[in-house]
Image (tube, rainbow, N blue to C red; front, side, top):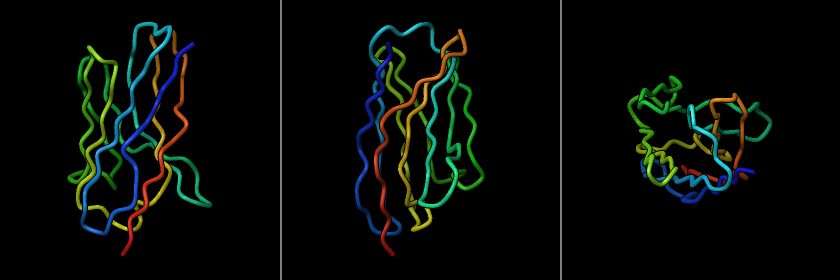
Length: 116
């Protein structure tokens, strides 16, 4: 079994920054990619950013230029640096791991609240 534990969420004013972390542990098969998703109240969960095992990244349009995803392969940890935060970034942020068998794992989520 694989466990994903997110941390780093909280309350921040608009224009501020937060750094989310997600540590993977357990019976981890070879990782294909790790990603961050978010879900705002009343909305569907959406992809924010993804990073593959070889370092390729992709971002939602809303995250481009403000968020940076990075990864420490030795620690099986993925980070999301979020700058210039806006109230519309308020959501529960979820960590996601996909292994090379195409199994998908989710973290419990961490709340990010941006006040105006």
